[in-house]
Length: 169
Image (cartoon, rainbow, N blue to C red; front, side):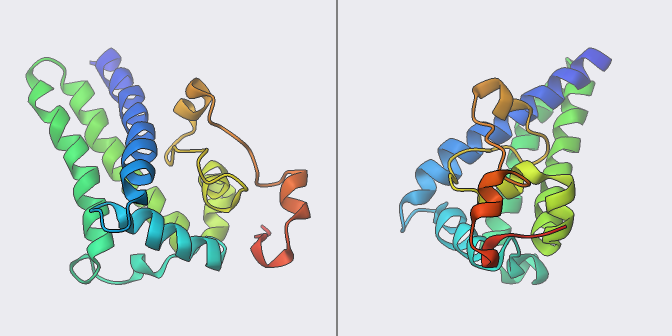
């Protein structure tokens, strides 16, 4: 069960990386596409506000973007569920990872200072010079594995940015 759980955590991080890169940024760049909210709304808002996104303050039923994100996250966990008879640990890790993803992503955009402290790789994704790096939210494991981890928070590059875009702890 423990091996299955560990594999579930790693697989969930890989899925998080791939979906963010290929679905939310790949398909999401098409303005009329289902996933356009991520690039054209979420990134635009977060970039302007230094990390904050008010979409997370409204009820899920009143935010189509928030609803799409929640459905996408749940779909990943549901997809692993048929494996419960083979590896309950794998499935448990999938569900735990889905909940962690949503909590961490929401918290980081409601409290940018918290995000900067606890998930700087996600802040790097939004506020760094290359928004097509740092795809992971919960942990940067697969960004390291895939060579897409590019630190920004606390680096010389961040200090050189105009004051309006720099968040201080």
